[in-house]
Image (cartoon, rainbow over all chains, first blue to last red):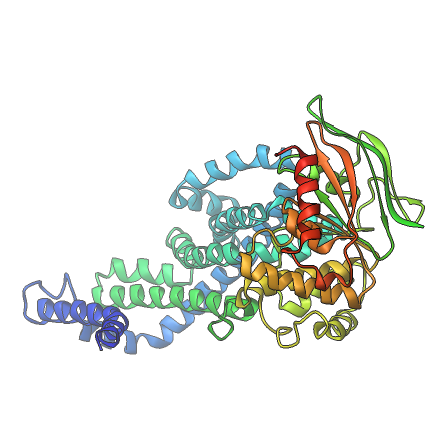
Amino acid sequence: MTKKFQSIINKGAPVISLTVIGLLWLTVSEGGIIPSYMLPSPVEVVKAFVSEFPVLAEHSAVTLQEALYGLLLGTALGFVFAVLMDRFGFLYKALYPILVISQTIPTIAIAPVLVLWMGFSMAPKITLVVITTFFPITVSLLDGFKSVSAEEINLLRSMGAGEVKIFRHIKFPASLEQFFSGLKVSASYAVVGAVISEWLGGFEGLGVYMTRVKKAYAFDKMFAVIILISAVSLLLMGAVALLKWLSMPHKRKSNR
Amino acid sequence: MSLLKAEDITVSFEGTNVIENVSLTLNEGETVSLLGVSGGGKTTLFNVLSGLYAPDEGKVYLEGEDITGKAGKVSYMLQKDLLLTHKRVIDNAALPLVLRGAKKKEAREAVKSHLEDFGLGEAGDKYPHQLSGGMRQRVAFLRTYLASEKAALLDEPFSALDNITKSSIHRWFLSVMAEIKLSVLFVTHDIDEAILLSDRIYLLTGKPGRITDEIIINLPGDKSERNPMSREFIAYKEEIIKKIGIL
């Protein structure tokens, strides 16, 4: 009995906390405690979302496209880096510090430079997304490759396997768990990266929309777009979870 | 004719010899144990025999062919089952065939034809984490057998199992070995296990490790009838303990 009750609490906890925050927001804004030009009520936000939907949909398509292209390229690049760094020790030593340093440069600082170099097209946005996404992929894959024990590698060698087969049959599968953790982080970075780069120059995308409504002090639209960006990030992370489920059948509950 | 033969193997590590002038033979169909204390160079010797490392001196022959430093000729099984967690039992066992270039489907068929004999009839579609330690070692042994149907090196394959599982897996091992034609060189530090399963026992003792004795086990009847409580069995045990020098 208590166990069942416990599980209901566990499952219901996030729903409860979200509802409480929503209700709090509603009382504070509708009750006039905070003026609506500073904090629009959830009702106004929903209204803005509905009326602006066609425009928002157009802008989200652009942002999503940038995020996806950047994520794909970033993943591919991260994969190549990880494989080469794992295979050649000197590359690992030479590149790892540079990779870490590259991550300490704030995105906000690189974005304008990229715009100056590449113009207002999609290219600087995708480049920024690539820069922010490939690091988690590289690091997570490297960790995954290193998680394979010398004994496992010896076993495959004793069966006559060379480097390529060792990679295919143990190193790569062993790194999937970590890879998907990295990809999840990267997917959330991708959307944020795309939005930030749109703030700093461009003609379309959710970031551009954001700067416009900000200048108009349209807080309701501002909140609507913030929630939309979160939703898009969650969608991408959900896609990653689905991909993980599909590619790791041994981790499914039915096989436990 | 001897199937696997090692001649005067010496391996040194950082200037000191780990094993010295080790020579041994494994004849067709035999199970031979290599008995010695832990850290006595047994695993080093196995790494040489399996071709993972080239020895500083000496040669390894399989059916007369020089295979010194060549991996992939003699199969190798370790104490840890090292089953791949992302592959089902059937694909784990099929791995050596796939690595040798067999098509996945053919490799699976080959495994299926052995599952029953190895006591894995129902387990083919399971993942390793769904099996007990004993069952996992069975899968590892099937994989080892498929890696080389001639000679296999087993490095303390059952030493991580509890005593009850161990004695049931010994019975299982003997019944499987009666069905297949596999020659096995078996490393163990368990004297009972060595006498129970072997035709001959080599004693590997000292530092650096050398083969100091060879004991031929001559007990009446089938191996499965060997009784660790019998007078003859205990006599062998006493002889070995004396020769290793722990009494």
